[in-house]
Length: 98
Image: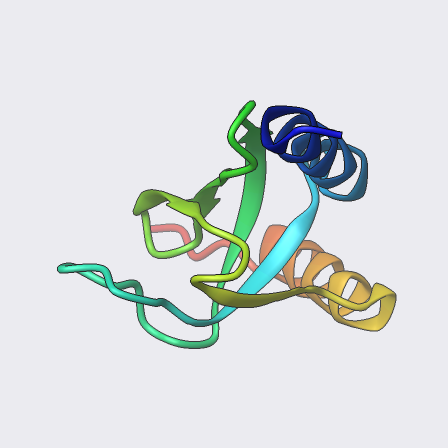
């Protein structure tokens, strides 16, 4: 197998492992001039053919994560459920009127 085929297969595995909508937590960015803060959560938008995982981060930034350069992990089912409960609590908060 040549290098191109190996990279293509790696990108395909990443696409399968991180489909759009997957929630991640960035642990640390590699060599980026404007890194995103550690422990910032984000949602996968797409994995490109080079294997870069493009995310919309909760802090409003949009950036690609490079496996092997950047450290990250998927959120656990418990963490996702907790986020969803927080969203429900905010939606059901009392509305103050005048």
